[in-house]
Length: 139
Image (tube, rainbow, N blue to C red):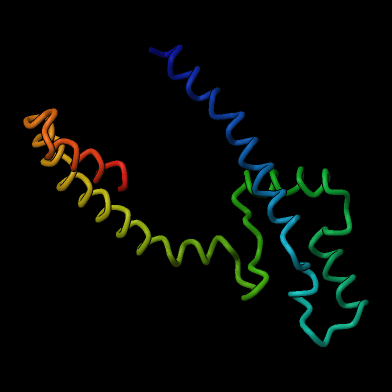
């Protein structure tokens, strides 16, 4: 059992690497420049350059990625380019409603899914079984 758990935990590592690279890449290929957005419409080139330096956008992409992984691993999610607030604070402020919705959604799924599953098993091969399978597949 311990070997199985270790194997499953180790299997997560490549997934985390893939998701990290994908997330970082999508942010970097997105249109627009974070420094320009943060500087605003009336900022001069020197202002934008200063912000790019503060954000580390003037460094090579590989260096940016390594630093981003390090900060993320420590829980430092940075600052919002729109509000200037800490992203961790923004996430915390929305955590309560998110957890409530998740718990209620899970409860709803269990309260509906288990009786429908039992009914579908009881009527295996029937039209009801087929309808419930389609309903379950569509979510």
